[in-house]
Image 1 (cartoon, rainbow, N blue to C red):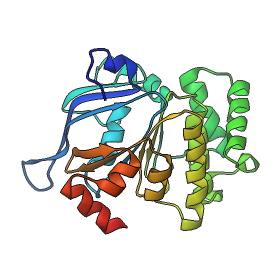
Image 2: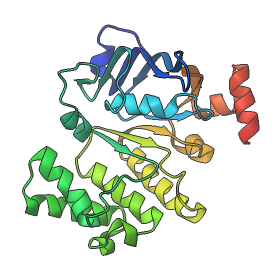
Image 3: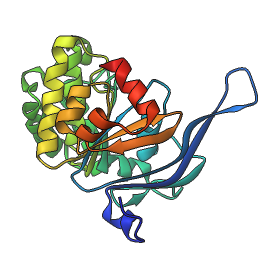
Image 4: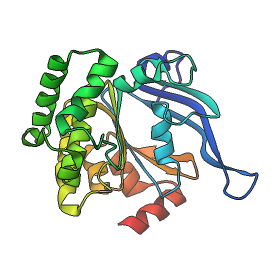
Length: 257
């Protein structure tokens, strides 16, 4: 990626020197979650982030929409300075949709209400408009017949579809997926991955943390390998998976094949 002065304006995601630490359990030391991460993601690019548990993958995603504040560095996503304390994070998150591992639905709201409510609160849409848009996206993800069901009445795969519909209904510029299939039964994973493939084919800018290497090979424009809070290696899927240059990358890939 380029380091031209206008790179931040051109990129959908632009980070420089992002550092994040957490207090270590039972001591005064701090654990490094992100170690001076530089990253650019272009408009309509699909980037898949892989790496061992604790490597900083999910923390990186959470910094991109302000769910985690960084210690230092700059982040610009969808034209917003995430690291600027004056940035309206609620408005930012409408433009930067995020799908989590555990769905994060309102348990006391129906599927329809889960998708419509954020539109009314953040986008200021009327109840009628929000519900019409919600229905169109519930149909898009294949759960329109479950619109009056509560999360407890839905399977894990159905809940994840509702969560994706909720994010898409905000018409985001960027989508972040944090292990979106890891909490699902194996037979439900394929449907969610197919939906993500559709979004990628339509030009949605996506940053995806996943252990689904087949998805990474098939869909990613670029695969990033992280370890110990740093980007160790990155490249096109066929390059990284078949001809990794870094020994740590090769070690990781040898263990998951």
